[in-house]
Length: 102
Length: 182
Image 1 (cartoon, chains in turn yellow, orange):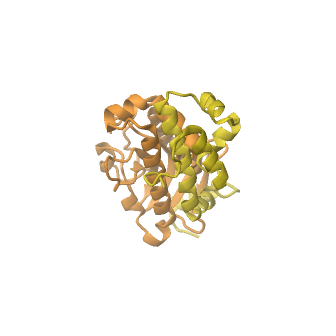
Image 2 (image 1 turned 60 degrees about the vertical axis):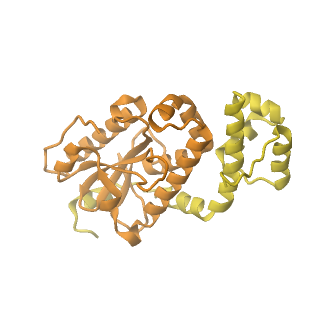
Image 3 (image 1 turned 90 degrees about the horizontal axis):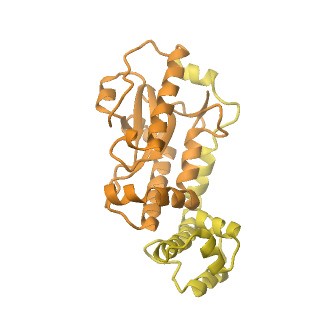
């Protein structure tokens, strides 16, 4: 137990449940490499949206996917199959796993 | 208000949870800063500031830089128990706060970004040497916090937390400054 007055106060008023930060941060760090690839796909789509002045709804329609699935892609945490990435690339004529983003 | 120890077994970094929120501020910040949807909305809504103050006009570039900076900040926080550099990680928010010896409002950012300064800020109150409570954070694109509602809100949160801690009798010192101009 600390002698510090402020730490004693914080301990008396601390939550019964722990912060999720540490676990979530460690998960992101441990999964950094594939997350970077997933984010590369998301960033390529965001470029495409900005260059073509498209809304999310318009992009989902162009890709032939639901708004919910597009949201998962744009979150940057979708664990794609290579087949899915290839489909997106073929639909839009873009390269999604560009070195500048990965 | 509730306080969350950020790193298990480590006393010196805490995060506050306001009564109307589901999760503590630090967890909330890093969820937002690693979410492409949130960042896309944010930069679409703040594209003029992004271009004006940082000369960045590609939203994807802004998101990529944010994701990278958030990852670096996160890594630094996770390594604080080994590095024991919390006082170096946070810096006083304003010239006024440099003069305050207890309970200063602090900001942390990733200081080594290339191309442009990092716009990510974590705001905290320094309770004593090496002891900080995170009150929130922001993507700060404008020179002052007062310039935009989302950064102004962070000032309000910081002051509320500071007032709560003062009101709870944790501190004796009474020399705080309410208005800052970062």
